[in-house]
Length: 454
Image 1 (cartoon, rainbow, N blue to C red):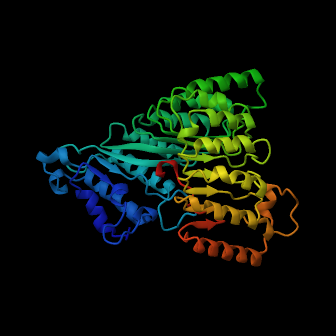
Image 2: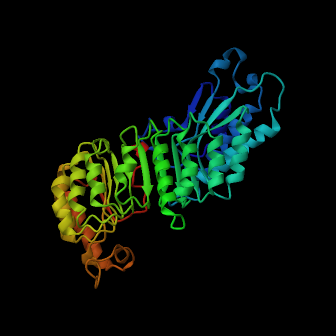
């Protein structure tokens, strides 16, 4: 963390144990309780790790500190997962997933092309566990790296794959190169596959029997197709979803699921713990089904952003909260058209979620009075640490009513009024002994927890 790159390179070069996991070692500093994993390693530090690994593979064992009789104790797994900048508000001094993907890929290719520099015993194979992020520009490079790692002393093992704006055939080609025993998450973003494209990709994803998280977006019919083809594709997609045995998180953001949530969730073999259905045009019957389903009582994370919960959806939404109250840790309700009336009607159920740590309400037309009521009633939620709230409607000038979410997100606010709001909320938190709870309007900070960190 402090850029001691020479020492870091030698540490990797001479590490005498089978596993080197930076995520495990950096949980907390033993001397000062510094939460190291909340920081991000510098680019220089990450490069030093890769250089140390390269040096190890090209150095005879006796020089690397590993005697032939102790080969069973030599480094076999280098775990670099969980350390990288994900690209949100990226610090220019840290190594992003894009950069690390490229750096590790170069090492794989160079190892395959160059072989070992010294004669003697063959290098002990090292499995490098990484999270990979790929787009159109980096696809060919990463594909070559994955091919090069087959049979190489440096074996690339992908834990989480994030593919952005990647053509269907390229996505399939990458999935075919990944180790089925390593992959934990597949995240396909901005690919706009539609049901036809997804029906091609999903059987290649379903072969990963240990997959715990599947994140898909824009799953909807293609208006250019006859409806019978769209229905066939949807049924095929559902059949493939039924093959997953370990799936715990499903994200279907911006997918048209109106009246179809029961079909989707009924195919799954195990209850979900994280379900993201942002901007899915959910109907009351979708929420009622989810509340009655086996998934509700296991949910730790629920995202219903962009679904209008202000009308006939409110009552079934409250039923869903009631069903999930015992387990829910993270609730995201951005842009759900919840005004004071709906919030106050929901508070008795919401405050039953006593384990809740995060509540997202940004983009809802709430007043200062509604926020204060929420703050007072949430005192019973001892685990609550973060509330992302909207700018109160009191701080806008001339709002139409009810205000569309686009107006709340784009209209200017009266900064003076909002400063007074912030001060009052802070005083209320102090008075209730909850100064540790963060109330903020910052939706771009690293506040929303990833499912695997819950």
